[in-house]
Length: 240
Image (cartoon, rainbow, N blue to C red; front, side, top):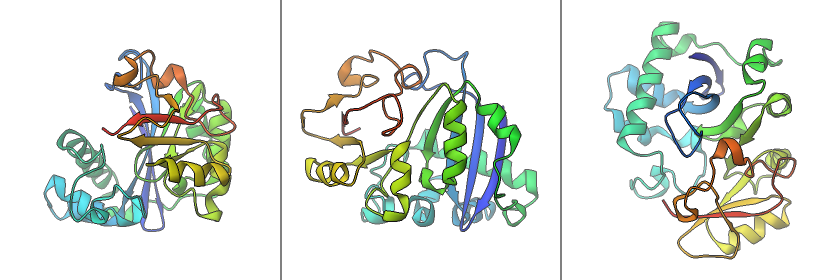
């Protein structure tokens, strides 16, 4: 496993390369993939001070921005699929490891202007999962562009589709929407959409989902890759 960490404003951007146990993502546990996480400095400080594991979701404002599934946007309810104990335990372990590496979260290096060659080489020929946790738009756009150009495939989602400064990311990310109305707005702004909803809205059902019978994996599919990626359709999935 290799990992690279950088501070971006009030957040920490982490690139992690290694085996995934998520069968929805990759076909078997022999495939090394790249996953990108964004945690807030507040989450690092919470863990550094010995805070409880599930408490990291109380400090998600700067890394999740205005995501409607963020805990603080839902009166303290855990509605995001990442807000579960197994994920939280893994996130906390990763945060502790980074803190040990730098002997404190305050020593994490700031992100450089240029994409390090070592990261680019690690991404070459791999599946890249943007936004395994947190908003992927904290990755510099030119970094994302260079990485996706050498990757085998990639997927990613953002709730920031309505903000003009993030329009360029529509090339590589899907707008994460939650209704037919949000989908229509995002489409009008030039995005392809991944809509999680409790109702069928007539879009292609995610081929790597339970409701499609897990026809494939995200690694093989790669449809959720923006307007420059493999797909040209809006995708939907039932709330999970």
